[in-house]
Length: 118
Image (tube, rainbow, N blue to C red; front, side, top):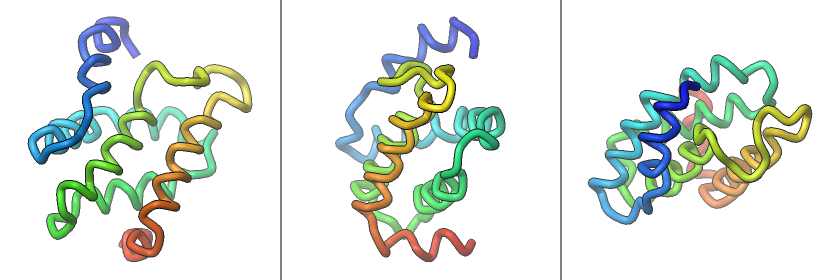
């Protein structure tokens, strides 16, 4: 990732997604950056299918914005260039990302099951 993106957009990634407009803005950031990161690290992580289910859930127009806000926060954490454990650390670099995704999956529970099959 280039430094210009990190400096300009990282503050945008730190916003709280507590209204419909902020969730839509977060969704736009995710659409711009998620696929690049999944393509780059998809073979290194075991939770790519979970990311896909979360993305499909996020795109569903029938899901309320406040439910989507949870997913936006988790996916933005995944794509953020700065996180608790740097992704460049061998083997453990994605543990914090996995923890955030796992917590989101646990929170949403069976609500996500249909999004694995699409």
